[in-house]
Image (spheres, rainbow, N blue to C red):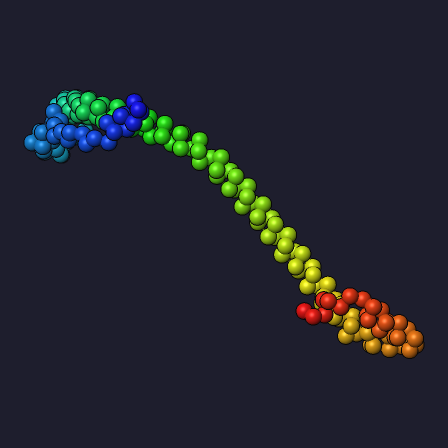
Length: 169
């Protein structure tokens, strides 16, 4: 029953918190405006100092934002791991039932498909055999046209003596 409780606990809604970063919209606009048209000739000491200060300032803001992101996300990541862990256990237990059933179904379907193809092959052979017999019957006179009447009589006698059940088809 302990596992069922864990599943129920995971299903409970969680509290949504306001996300607050150490960098405000005003600060972002200030940095964007301040460094919008920065100088590119760093051979001039004043330009180099300006860029150096800008890189340092931006770097601190980015690092602070990233640290806060990780802090805010930590609980969500742990919750996600718990969700995944419970789902994995559920899927493993269900798979232990599903897999043997799936295997026997696939085996049966495969055997049924093989049997169906074999039956189709035998039916095709049967139909071909009937066609060959009908062709032989149709051609009995022309095939024996140069033969004696005795040979023709024997061929006809052979047909009468053979099983003609196929002829009904």
